[in-house]
Length: 453
Image (cartoon, rainbow, N blue to C red; front, side, top):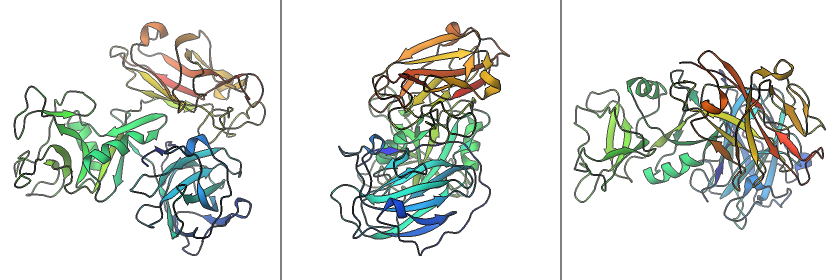
């Protein structure tokens, strides 16, 4: 049960609030137990019944249901990103979801297993807005007691690269499992991976995150590589990028393949304050240490704008999407768009990752010179037109079954931008069956980028 969907966004929360351990959750969504702020909140779904409907976002191991569910009505203490999890706080095989204000959705995030048989989701919140938290079980699993934890969940951004980084604490996790879990996380529509470190600047930023001791990163030793030799030959990054920079702990020294008789050390972790060295890399066995892992999201430096979430121009037929999304489509969510790569014209490695589209229906990425209606957008189909003026078509994609689509590098020729240009990007997509406003098409929010040399 490793299907993890996390809807992420960017914010900074500089304070924390304490939760109550007295809350237990209501068996009915309509009478959800009111909670607020950050902290731990008790739940008991031992005798709970099903009070909710299946949702595609909750699909895991063939089921979109959340059974034996109890409900909380939670008020966000600030604008930003929050984490809700049951990691280490219960023996129940949990499945959890976050809904935007209404018992009928839309579902902002849902997760079955993120930390063993327990669950974790990340979602955007708006100050004072109420969200419904659904805490249940994987279908067929029994209920029980435990607590949900609600905390600040924002990944940090490296200003040098625009990438985002998240330190995940999960004692006992193997490198193999950490690699799988990292790939399921999504931030601004971009899937994560175990962090890969390309230079000293990025390494220093990762060190500055704190809490990185015994955390897995994305290096491994490939026994099939032409240069493979113990202990230092054949090391690669999981992304395939060259390992041009290394920072092994030189005091021990590492790598040393010294895991004991019959134990090979073919995976990479960060160690701190070992042999007099404050920070460095170590080779370790897949089962060793495992305090957690570090995720990298290769987001770009683009600024998202013109959301269909009710914070600006209302959507055409009151079909506002979730926080940070476009207007809601027939799937019950709004499409998202995020840039990847850089804004360097010479590198031409700019790409885009989109989510929450209608599966199998075509999606067009386009750019324009202008932010329509001063960036607030205007009605267009079931959504808001955010980008316009000298429109350039940058490619059509067909989303996968999860509604995701991506556009790779090499877009500059079609876009025609040069250093110093500002461009606005958006996606248009078909929604031919049961679109909320009946137009048969919709749009994501916009993304604004300024190009450099």
